[in-house]
Image 1: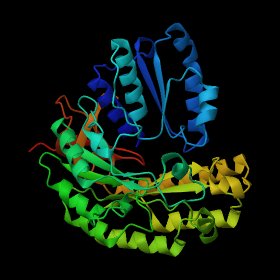
Image 2: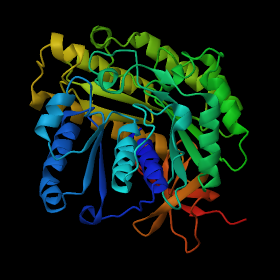
Image 3: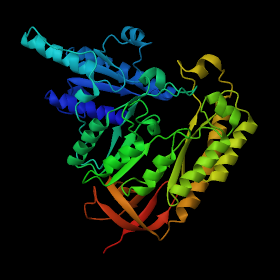
Length: 427
């Protein structure tokens, strides 16, 4: 989501005549777009802000914009007091404060008396994003914020409640990205399945997938992140029916124990998730599934953790994104629960699941050895061309040809848990 927001900021600044520079010392405007999902990310943001102080002192006209989840309504006055060198504070996905600040400054310099400024830019007024030159895959936010309220999650308090963007603006943005050379679009939402639930016209993610599939030049569509309580059969049916929609579902389970899931306020049980995985595999038999798991949630016992281990072993999912529980101020878990699992124990549990998933992923990927796979190549990395299969498997091939943005069939020659090597199949 932050990558998409940053590209939109870049497009807006280019509209003002600015150009991107890779060196902060050369910049007239620096935008620090922040994430606070984990404490480590928030700590890095504060460290980066502090490191900009000498630069601001040497260049008083430098504009520093703090943007993203670090900027919340409850802590704005504290941030302004802590960072007096920051000129503009922008909430997540909101570029209006920076644009209004720069507009006012330009008008002040030109000694113009009037300006029509707004406190917020409407979705219809947002500039279309500019992907990086040669970018093959781009993110496209369709649901902003979240209203579900998992007890560990800071997103609702930082990004606000759930808001679906209008389908017309999403389609216009998708066409713009494709016109600029993008071949694959990933639709984003904290709970992407809930797209359209707050719109009056009955719009849904399943409908949007069909509308995006009609865009000429768009080769692939992905969406994330799904939620076990909202991933409907209609979405799965559309994913199976539409050739451009990739058969890869990211649907976090977070824990494999019912009491922990209830404490997290996830809204489903272990058995519900098991049945959902079976449904996904029924609709997408050749597809892949990714999940998220938090270890060390407050009061998680060894037996409850073992339930998570057992569930992962049973379901054999393609990828698992692991995190150790981190208390986040502003969340129900922070207010009501004690972070009772020691850090060393969290790490032990993390390693157990990491080793389990590495073994499972290795075994799943080994079945692809010597098979033919369609890969969309994105860029070069470590001297090879890097791309992904429709099921989101990372593939590397050697080639002297330029493969950026090319769909090409390959033969898998080596498999590992996190990536595969291949050779091009020449027609």
